[in-house]
Structure formats: C-alpha cells, structure tokens
Length: 87
Image 1 (cartoon, rainbow, N blue to C red):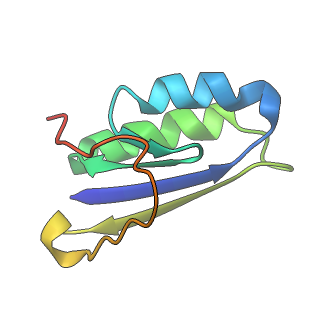
Image 2 (image 1 turned 90 degrees about the vertical axis):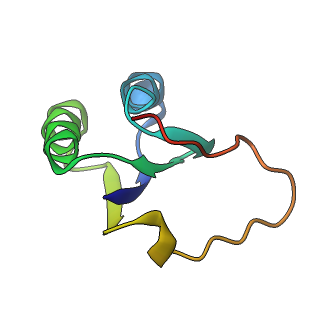
C-alpha cells in the first residue's frame, strides 16, 4: 500500500519521530513522509508512533491508497527528496 504521513508534533519529539519514520518511508518535506509499505509495517508504525507522541498536543495524519498509481502528485518549487521505494 502507498502511504502519505504528515505530522504536527512538539519540537522536542521531532528528531525521534523523523528518525523512526526514515526506516520505513521517504522524507519528502519537513513534516511529510511517503512511500510503499506493507500492511504489517503500517501497523508497526502506528503502534510505535502512539507510544512516542503526546496525545494531548501532537497530531499525525496517515493517508493510504492501494498503490501509488492511484495518487496524482504535483510538486511546485524545489523538491526536498526524490521519492523511491524502500522495500
């Protein structure tokens, strides 16, 4: 499945969250990751993020699609990182 994940979290947790997500997804903008992962990996990511965030202050959005082909992506300006498949 193809995943787009965006977060709005406290600055003291940014490095921890970012370094964890880099193991599974491509870092495409300061608070946005995307990439192709398995359903099992998504459940693992969700479980770990739940343990890392402050549920009273932080917010993480996860969008899923069966395949990247079902998502139209338009980038304006400088691309932070090229998207590739980590699998």
